[in-house]
Amino acid sequence: MATRESTQTGSGQSQSLERGLAILSAFKPATPELGISELARVLGLTRSTSHRYVATLARLGYLQQNPQSRKYRLGPRVLDLGFSAINLAVHRSLVSMEDLVIRLSPALKRTANEVSARIGYRPAAA
Image (cartoon, rainbow, N blue to C red; front, top):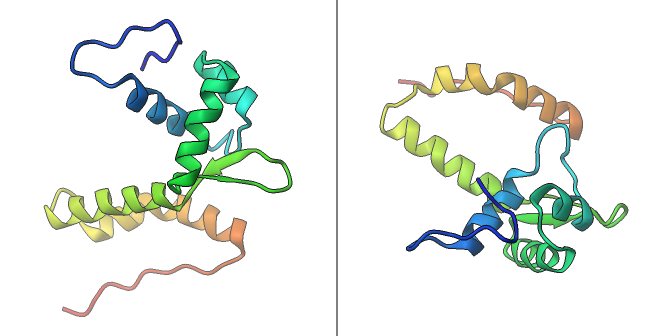
């Protein structure tokens, strides 16, 4: 996904949407929190442009700011999108719930350890 300031977006495409999604995609397990300057550098945007997009994404709940570090991390609205995609895949029988749990178990366990919580899955009674 090209995100450089000088990149021209083709007809019928939204450069703003492309940039917003590029910002969300910049957050990785190795970099769960990023500051405005880091995002600007990674995406090839100016700090002011990055700040405008981040402020909008934060206001909408797609990013959250860590009050101590002042860096940003993915917010709860991103989870909403992920859960919607998972539910759709299960509903359309693209993947079974059991297969999904097996695939997601490592990530769920890491998350549970990070927040000191217990997680579990029990199949619904048939």
